[in-house]
Length: 383
Image (tube, rainbow, N blue to C red; front, side, top):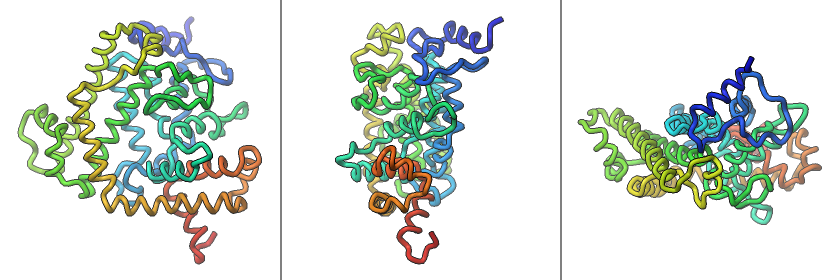
């Protein structure tokens, strides 16, 4: 009698598109493991990520607004959940492998620093001459090395396809940390749609959070092309309550972007004669993307957010404080390794002080980084 896993693999082969990634065809894991009786390989990846410590820490890592600024602002965890939800909707509509798409989505920010992109930029500056810092590479390091959940190996031992999706997230992969992930190959379609789902999620929840905070002006937002397109699609009078109107139109924008991505990507697949998984891998460029009009409107939205939200003086003031916390911690730890927790002493011998401090800081939550900074810089704080 077939096991549940084999039955699920057969269902994938029957129902998924010919260019989808089949779990039965995975390139496998770095460390050999027996297949599970009733879960596919990508389902196992998803569950390992969800149960990791790095995933739980995302709850207290900044998206734009630091966690303690309000209960309703997005955190890195809620952002990740939104990306996974959008990715699953796209994958299901396109008959791609939902489990692989969800796994990549759930893992895509595991290596992110505290304080969002501000923390990432500061660590990258501090590591100039030491290889820099980039959160996709750190996310891969988290799942391959830093998570300690198994006696037989370090990391989560995820499949090749999930790990490729992590390292090739957000742009062309050109960093040869491993010969396993071939720079000339495009990532799977499941991985490609994560880039778009990520962008759809953060643009729209930053727009929502920005207006909720009062930093973004509603009358200015209404002038954006993507907003006007959504109002036309909405097709009826907006609710009189501004808060309700904002929610209705942002929901419509997300639906507009998701629908356009699906339609445009399927059109490109047909135009480029892509009929198999390997056709996707061997294509000269990525296939997933928006139409020209929607892409233009989306770029305008990103410019608007960059100028009016991310560079707003209130956000910049918080950003400067965050940069200082990261910089001070890095300087103290590298200059005085004995200030690190004892559990990291062996890591210094194995990986060196720079790598050890980078891993330690990158894994911090916002509140832990702030507390560590207070303990190490405030003479009156208890250590």
